[in-house]
Amino acid sequence: MRTLPFTVLAEGSAGLARRVSYAGDARPPSSDAQLARFARDALIEEVRLTPKPALVDARGSGAHSDLDLATMLRSAHALEPTFEALARASRGAAPGTALRTDLARIGRAGEAAMMRATQGSNAHRGAIWIVGLLVAGATIVHRPQSSDSECAHAAHICETAAQIARYDDLLAQPAQSNGARVRQRYNVGGARSEAQEGFPHVVRVGLPALRAARAQGHDEAHARVDALLAIMASLDDTCVLHRAGLAGREAAQAGAQHVRDAGGVATQAGRAAFDALERALLALNASPGGAADLLAATLFIDRLVQHRMGGRTVSWNN
Image 1 (cartoon, rainbow, N blue to C red):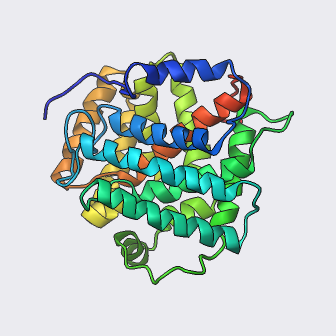
Image 2: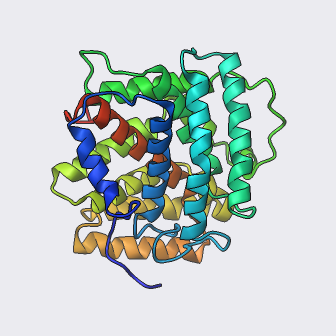
């Protein structure tokens, strides 16, 4: 596989320029459309981050035979109207069965739009659930309290989204998805439990790892890969379990932790461990797609909260 330098490839050079400009603006997002753009951009930035172990990136398709960078980007753009509709439905609402059912209906329509954009490939089904709920939570929690730190505001958004996820979708059909089968076979929670428990891999894992890497002076691409690896090291990833069972989960978790123990991807030893992790996952045809969705969720919350807080920073370990 061809190796490229670690890069963050946003929508042209403006991607990171937009990020910098947010830091000096303490206003919360003023519209549903802006929240949708933040969500879309998080999906784009996740997929364009290169390299990622066994995932679609600028080098190629990783462990996916039916996905590539162009397909993933079409999916992300196709989902922007869905994210806007989710925000609009949540505006002025409160967590409850009615909102949960309405959001699920919009999410199913978004999944159909994704499938049309990808010619039938599942690019972002998990992200529609994970990031979509966070869009709803961010709409309801539309501005930080005066005493909030960044981590407190992030946790408030995630807990509000979790409250929505705990209600039943009255129109739900019996689940026959790969994720549902994996949850039953391996007794793991999957994306549903991640949401209902308040997105712990965003608040307690992804965001702290992202901020810690930045504080150590790593560039943004290395920081984001380190956040992905932190998520992988503890996540029971249903995508990995579906493709490669318990052997795949062990390879993903232990391999990601090995990279972290070696100093992260910014070090020579860490990069060697990263390459070994990728080889192991590719040999098992295992893709950490659940971790990728949670990285996108982490990037969404990170950008949104920095925008709302005017760039003030605190330790995510508080």
